[in-house]
Amino acid sequence: MVTMSSSSERSETRHTIDLTEVFDALPAWERRFRAARVSLPEWADDAPDRSLFVSNATGTYEIYAWDRADGTQRRVTDRPNGTTEGTLTPDGEWIWWFDDTDGDEFGVWRRQPFAQPADIAADAPDPEAVPGLAPSYPAGLALGRRGEAVVGRSTDEDGSTLHLIRPGSAEPLEIYRHRESAGVGDLSHDGALIAVDHTEHGDAMHSALRVLRVDGDVVVSVAELDDATGREEPLGLSCLGFAPLPGDTRMLVAHQRRGRWEPLIWDTVTGDEHEIVLDLPGDVTAEWYPDATALLVEHSFRARSELYRYELASGGLIRLDTPTGTVSGASARPDGTVEFLWSSAEQPPVVRSTSGGVVLSAPGPQAPSSVPVEDVWVEGPGGTVHALVQRPADAGDGPLPCVFEIHGGPTWHDSDSFAAGPAAWVDHGFAVVRVNYRGSTGYGRAWTDALRHRVGLIELEDIAAVREWAVASGLADPKRIVLAGGSWGGYLTLLGLGTQPDAWALGLAAVPVADYVTAYHDEMEALKAMDRTLVGGTPEEVPDRYAASSPLTYVDALNAPVYISAGVNDPRCPIRQIENYVGRLEGLGKAHEVYRYDAGHGSLVVEERIKQLRLELDFVARHLR
Image 1 (cartoon, rainbow, N blue to C red):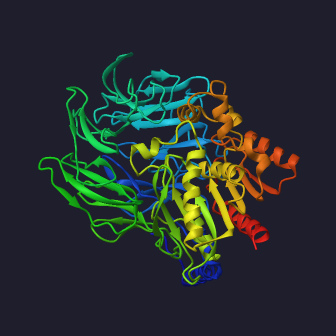
Image 2 (cartoon, helix red, strand yellow):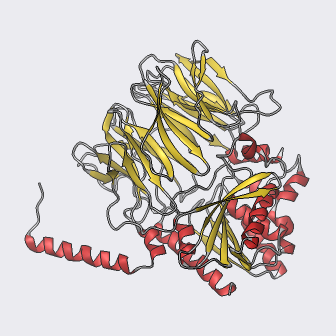
Image 3 (cartoon, rainbow, N blue to C red):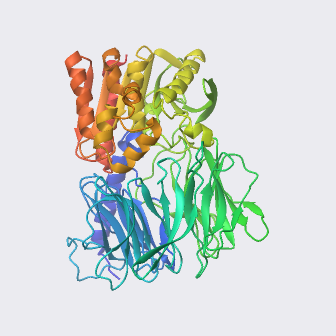
């Protein structure tokens, strides 16, 4: 045991107090960003005391190893732009993590021992996990108990490929290749079966499943499950994992056969299917308990979620103790307890256990709370739109300056969960409105699929309907409404400023699609497939649709000043198409400001995130009275 002298202890205590005093002196919005956070820990299947989690404890989001047996923790990665993608081998002996360049998402898998030997230099680079496998965009990873691995890759040249790495084999074996997007689903407990999520039918929004077996160097297709090919309205499937038992050929699958996500169990050898029908509204997904006698069910409805245990033998459904809010991941432990990451719009995230108490706490001061969210239902042109509203606690009834914070995706949704950005706007006297427009998940398949072929324009119809409600209800001052968002939300911000120029006082667009045609040609291959699905083809095949959905088409109509931030290494919303849009703004003399930073699709560095929000706050303060 290492000990300190009493003088050293006093010095350390004084330093801690000074740091706490500095933290407490910061404004609440900044403390929410700086407060240390941890992700839901992942544990090794056969060594459950060995876990990984992601934390921003050093100011950058990195991967940490945690030995629960003795409580020790250590940082696994240390890179200027952060690291968040990593996993453990089933025996807990090795950590695999993905190494890209400056946040561009293009790179290789590396690995290091969980128990890092003392004789390895701290700055020694981790070796490549699969030497000789060229860099790519990641498309899934499955690690087996015999040392095998299935690595999913995506490149512009090859499309989607999967490679099997076997102990003792000199070269990775290519087991799958297709131009359309695909990825690794899972590896069976004994390593004999490999699940592939694929979109060979050409619809990137609705995957099908294939199960492969490798005999020597021969790849054999064992089974297919496809709810998309040949259907007028394709349905999606998703691999949720093989049963965690030796020799068990069952797979847990998510399907959309009744208009929402639900689980089924598919025996990949016999072909038997057992749909699990639960009397729960909204989307239902699940994972296996470690003994495969039950399923851990996550139920999402109206922007909130909760957990259940479903007994496979009896069909009994038991609700687990989860507070009102959002579960952002859950995992069943071998002892039957469940760990989950929970938050609400009011309360910051915490890793809880159904056994009671907090599982893992981030070191240092915690984030201050915010205000609760209110539900609003507005009739829009395509049905009822759900919006979430936060307003300053002491602001009165309004009308208030208002920020419409538009989520990305588009196949995502805002929920009753903690978010430092919206909370910052509330701290500065703004009401914040978040809209789950058509295209959002969580409201049924028809709602998610509704934006095809009029991409962007459909979402903005729903946003406009909620804006009309916000003004009519007295919440929002019509002359002080800001349209803001990142990624797809940044795209909708630029498109909204051009197609609804009189509706918005300002625009804040982070890592947006700005020139849809150039974005398509420069983006990563998996997103090209998604765009072909959403728009109905390539820019050369359906040029009018791309033009109708591109912010660049409407730049002449902008009335509002616009602030744009962009990562120069972004593979999702590449920088060249943003520069094209900015060039048009400059040529037309439109009021705008641009901030470029050295990262990809957003930043994993806390100081950078704070800087970006501070720049947005300053822009709004100067342009919005």
